[in-house]
Length: 124
Figure 1: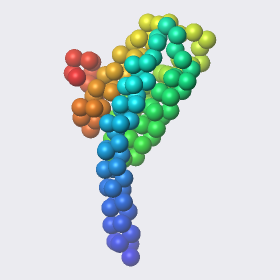
Figure 2: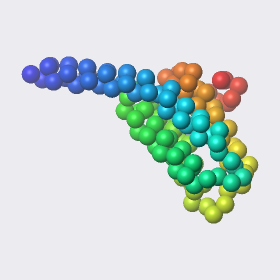
Figure 3: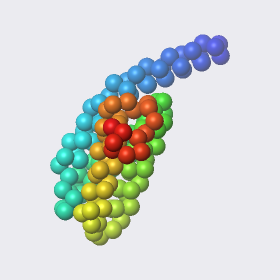
């Protein structure tokens, strides 16, 4: 019975991995759309919340479904975003730097989310 349970578990996990991988372009697209609408001089709270939710979901799900680096990088971006939200004001230049990192993340995720994470934008 143990072999059957293990086989069923890994079959189901494989199906869920495939489902996550298939949904990834859409999820990254939502993140890119939010980023495109983001104004670093006047960030909208609803947009910040949406980006936070997407990154939080990616961080947890990616690690679960075999995209460890994708999840780790989402967590880094999410944590920086969370820090920004604790301040009354964030300089537009700081938002721009965070958005540049987000751009690299989305481009890399669309290209090959299981590869090594690039050190800079030139790698994309």
